[in-house]
Image (tube, rainbow, N blue to C red; front, side):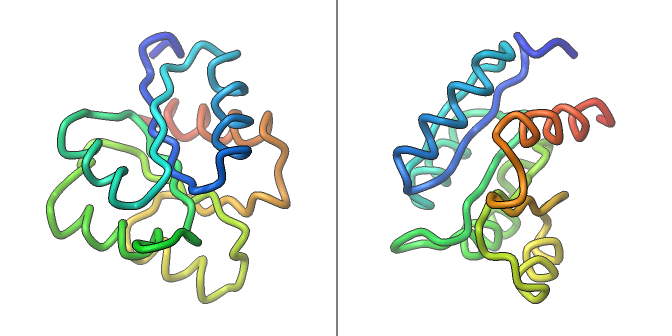
Length: 127
């Protein structure tokens, strides 16, 4: 699977982070779509198929845990690799995210954007 055909949805309510991660993934040839809220992400997931979803947890209105719950309940993104990309790093948060269906949990502060891209590539190479 070449990067040029891989479609990723970035979900975060921080415009700076959306821009930064978008640039890094686009530099590697990925197709990037962004959602600046949990509700926007759910709408996009109803109408498009993504290879991967990078999901923040701390967002207004609908947090990432609620988005994961709704994804599972509404059977959205069934073929997508879902990776939480958050600054919440407590053991309970990580366990909860993985229990709700995320394949990985990346703590933003512990990885550079380039390392995040590499982790996503690694997960997608296993598909």
